[in-house]
Image (cartoon, rainbow, N blue to C red):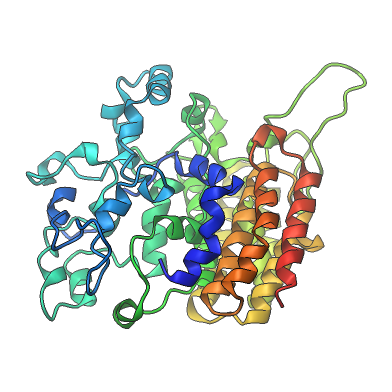
Length: 459
């Protein structure tokens, strides 16, 4: 992790935010993207030599070479992937599996799609162990085709990619890999539906840039930049939001994912529009709040629009020519949900195109310092904050403010010490979303507004 970026989020481990992020990281770390062109999965042990990635100190000439130690860290989010299979053997996972009637969680395909690498039995090398959890190849791709070439003298990253390595430096490729498990895919074992959550699985929540930072095992130093280019965290955040919405809408439109028996698949809908207090007392006041961007009838579940809210705020600043179109398509999608499934699927396709167009803008161009401040203000400002009526969008908002503050430091547009001085305000926003059952929209808006105001002072 680069020094400035590390300082920007360094206090996270000691803060309330750390507890929240550990919770968010628990669900199904990793990816099941094959990422190869036919090669076998060689296993974590094939990368663990002291001349490769198995050193106890980060003293490698080109790469750190202690990546396995970071991956195995039992005390931090950076070690979450190595723990992913082991959690299936714990009491909570066993109880979930028992409720679902799927046998042992540690052997269940429903679980292994995300809690272990995507290695069919016929493609596992002699050093492969499913108990390693989400290892190197789950994200970097089946390694037999590129294992030797990636450390060969004169080898290039592009050549390794041609042999099957997943180009995680490409934000779209990275998002596609991460979203498979941290959001869901159409593949078997990679979709935490409402039934699985009802059995006790944690709610899925993901933000590409923040989670990438917490999982980062490399230094973005001079030779890394020369080989792969400099990471643009704002582009990672925005493209991640675009692709998360794209993925959500594509799964919703998928007949194998969008419905569950006679019901729609409730995974796609905002939990708090249903999970609220109810009462027959004539004095009872419903706790739901009107949301100006969701023109749906009272009593109807609302689609989880956390990524729509973030993209709307970003587009108003960086892609104003697309902002009105995106807001219109978002609104039309909510309206279509109240008509019938065919209308909703058609509206989802239109909204996906708008989301992709905004993602393309961020992927292809830089964002100025003033624009970055404007996006943060937009997320916390009056034009968007009225949409924070439910827990999911609010979690996404505080992660966005956190990651965009780190982007200011990474790009040299704010000092690490200045960012550290307002960490308390960010942490208070995390506190407001720490417990979904205690979530209060007004309190959250106030805490997020204070955090944004503190960041604004960095101007």
